[in-house]
Amino acid sequence: MIQSMTGFGKSVVELPHKKITVEIKSLNSKQLDLSTRIPQQYRELEMEIRSEIARRLERGKVDFLVYSESIGKGTSAQINVPVLEGYYQQVKEASEKLGIAMPEDCFSILLRLPDALSTDSQEIDETEINALKKAVDEAITHLEEFRIQEGAMLQHLFEEKIANIAQLLKEVEPYEKERIEKIKGRIIDALTKIDNFDYDKNRFEQEMIFYIEKLDINEEKHRLDNHLKYFLETMQAGKGQGKKLGFISQEMGREINTLGSKSNQAEMQRIVVRMKDELEQIKEQVLNVM
Image (cartoon, rainbow, N blue to C red; front, side):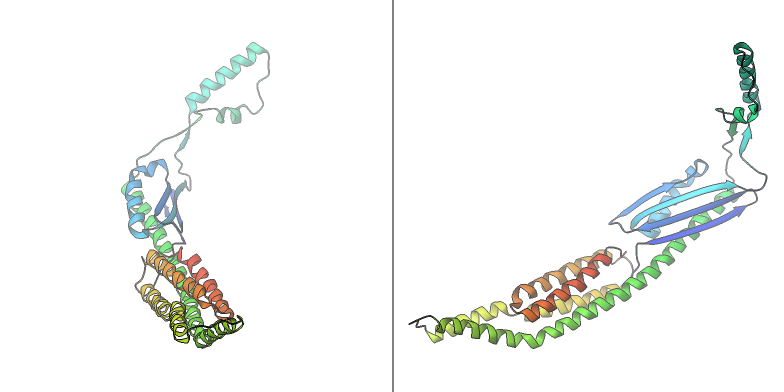
């Protein structure tokens, strides 16, 4: 079964004093276009994470996000008391020198000044590393499951559109012989309206056969039928068939266009227009197939 490139996955793991959240989403793209946002403390694992994403997702415009937050009483941010003392002395001296009263909420102002809070870049232990890896794995798995579900919907759509084109191809048949007779009749009628015009009937028949052969659509019908079957067979091969399905749909388009140029009959041209409409819907969605 085919897979879609569109997907979303999320995982949350909790440690005694920290919660780690991983989110990943993907859209269609010809290649893997990976964008990551990872906190500084996990940077050493970034290359390993990127490699795992590339191995499992293969294609798509992928946005990957990791964020962590402290829970409970534990926090990595600390009030930098010596810095606050220095700021306070400066504010007090400036107040006395300028004759301006000290602000009422001096402490809250001091906390907003540069370096008033310090964050220690603590080493992450093995427990936290394993927790992060677990969250990454779960998020990617959820995205893969999403892709499979979307792929099943796409496959159902493609099967429906291919069946519609195959049915329209059968509807062409009744008009084929009728079309040839009409063309032949129009040419003969035009010739008879020319005054005193004489022509070699044998030569006329030869030219007519040559002209009708140029309008024959049996080869186009046969090739289009083969392309429809090949499209269905390729879908059964599973994921990684998106580009091939795109190529097959292009070949289907060439045969349908040739049918239209050779049809030379209103009813057949209307059928060809309906074929093109069905194929266009396939082409739009095949861009999202892995």
